[in-house]
Length: 188
Image (tube, rainbow, N blue to C red):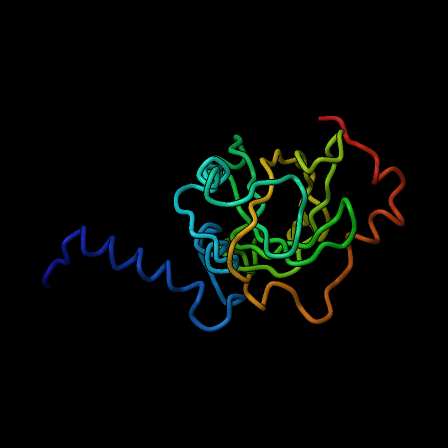
């Protein structure tokens, strides 16, 4: 059996990964969060997710206010050694947005799948989106962890139409309505 040179194999796998987010539906994507966010948002940044914030400086608008199609950049932590990026699919209210992202919850026992309209809740002390909680499918609720966030990157192009469903589940709005103190800052 003929061996494929390692360089050729790596380049082929990279090309397949880069195009898999755009092949067919974004929601059929399985892989890392970075290629998914790039394909879904149109923001052309490469490298580990946590580096997107600094790479965007001078190329894209960076802010602490969410809007549809913006990429949120999670900081590098022990739990997220490469950070995480996700795309805002819908702004529900000032402290709740919906995300569409890949490689967060397990689906059918494995990571990497795309998830549409996932609840993200701002729990930062200053209401500035610097600390968030994320809906975690494995527990069917907001995960127990609080994740530090750098902020939102606004792209120049239109975001993918599939970011949000026609009938999103407004779980985030219910959190503020029915969870006592959910709108209050949470200490770390």
